[in-house]
Length: 68
Image (tube, rainbow, N blue to C red; front, side, top):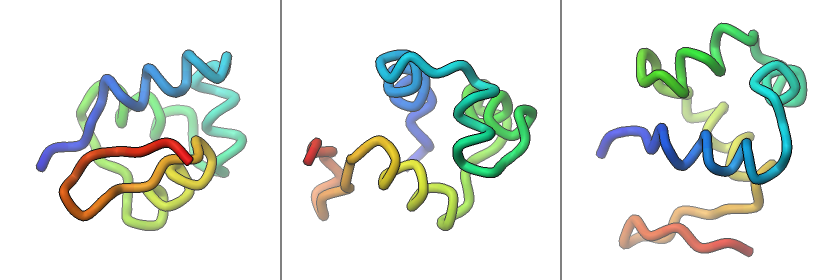
């Protein structure tokens, strides 16, 4: 399964965050967030956990997302 680039961008925009603010919040570099959103890199498992916790989403076993 590929990383959901559009979903990350959608969640970030819905939260009213710039790429820079999301990077700061997650303690990653701005370039990292840009690369995630462009599909040039995938978040590590640790970063995925931080993203899920921040946006309040969990991955269900059947790969469907559900907001808490």
